[in-house]
Length: 200
Image (cartoon, rainbow, N blue to C red; front, side):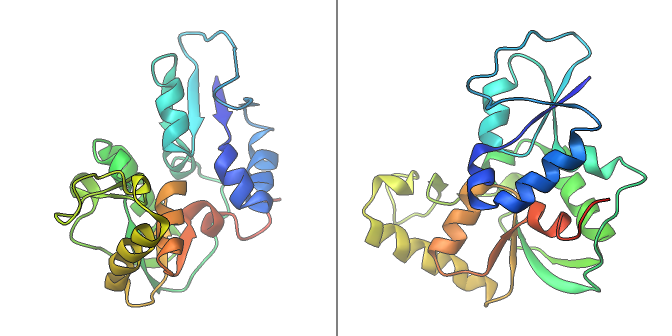
C-alpha cells in the first residue's frame, strides 16, 4: 500500500498546491500525518511516497520509499500541463546526489510537460547545493551556510543564482528553492509546475 507523506514545509510555502496534491492522492492512498509524529505500523509491502528529502530521511529506515516524482512518472492517466517548450534551468538537490532514480524521474516529468531543461555543470550526483543547508564553496570553511550571518547567506546565494541569468529555476527541494529565492533568483518548485492545472 502506498502512503503519502505531505511535506509540512511545502504546505506552508505552497498551500494551494499542497491541497491539490492531497485531494488527488487521497483517492489512491492513505495520507500520513507529519513524518515526525506519524506512528503507524508498516506492512512489508508498504511504500512511503515523499516529496521532501527531510521526510525521506525520517521514514527510510522504517518503510520502503519512493519519491512523488517516480510515482507520478509511472501513471498513465495523469494530466500534465504543457509548457510549450519553455526553457528552464533544473537544480538538483545535494541530498539527492545518490538517487539517480530521482534524477531520471524528474527529467522524465519535465519532458512530459514539454519543458526544455537547461542543465548546469554541478547537477545530479555532482550537486553541491541545497540552499543554505549545504553549499560547497572554496571560500567557505563551513558548507552549512545557515551558520553564517544573513548578509553572508544573501551574498553567496545571490552569487550562485547569477549562473541562471534570470531564467526560471526548477527546484525539487524546499531548501534549494529557499536558497534560490534568497539570492533573488526566479525559482519555482517542481510540484507547483506539475499541479498548475486543476486535477479532475
